[in-house]
Length: 441
Image (cartoon, rainbow, N blue to C red; front, top):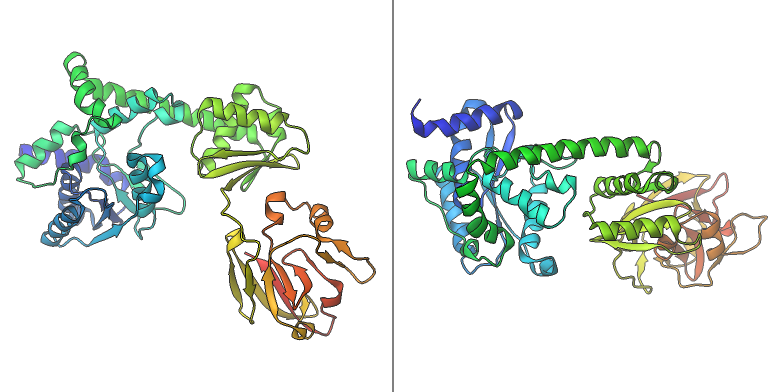
């Protein structure tokens, strides 16, 4: 075997068992040497293993050279007849996270949207070592220190594959030189003010002098951390028992554990819902409020783009709510489906007989969907007296953060129903009447 092909065969031996024949593989192509080498290797292997190869370039618009990088990637893929998609993203709304973190988050979101089986990323052994050190310097726990797996399966999104993870940066550069490959250089890679660049240019060369095998040893450490993380997840799963319920968890599951196991279970719950991992001091404060705040306290702890809430001895993890416009009004003109932005959900209208809201009585006035403003009343059945909406929502155990966002159907100025919950007796369809059932998705 010629030396130039050694690295390709090594990558093939590690990657082929993970990718079934006819898999669609999309390469994250920045135009840098790592992703150019990855594209070149997978292009060589695609025909052998019947993979369907394509590429994606994420245009961040940060550098003045961003357009030129996109053109370079387009030309490279065109020469090899590889389909390329270019996605433009706006980093401005996420700048508070830091440029590196914001760009990484937007890239991952772009990869998640792609119609493919696998997204191939060009992370290599040096990246793995740098990532582990960065995580340790940030005080990350076992899960953070486990760094990057070669294959990450993700429900509802393409799997992430890192074919070069066991290759060094030097091997990648040698491969590029041997095959006469061209690539672009991101000027930000020389900026030592970025933590990763500081490690790469200042710290790693010193480690290489005294510990030349550091890539392998740190890689093994990352694998040990990953195994420990899996064991902690197994323990958390056992501790949770039957306490998990979608985006909620029974508070008793936390209260019955030792502090260390309670923190582990709370981390597991947050991670399972896609929240960022809080620092330990933040996690401990979250746990204290959840377990010790008085029964009627409105616990609400921010966790990145999520909020942790407590209601009726359950812990909830929810996206941070958008600002509410109490004057929001949505006309209903017979549509089967309507978007309801206050709850980020959809309303479904299905027509039936002898149930739901009487269609005949709805002809009395204009039909609109609105939000609570206070003092609304409703009679839940013919023999009942009028009840305040506040009382009805409490009786049905609707969490406080949902009460202001529930859709209310009005006919003219009369409250007809709280969607999916209760219909005013005056508007309930009789056994022989045509009706409409309204529900939230």
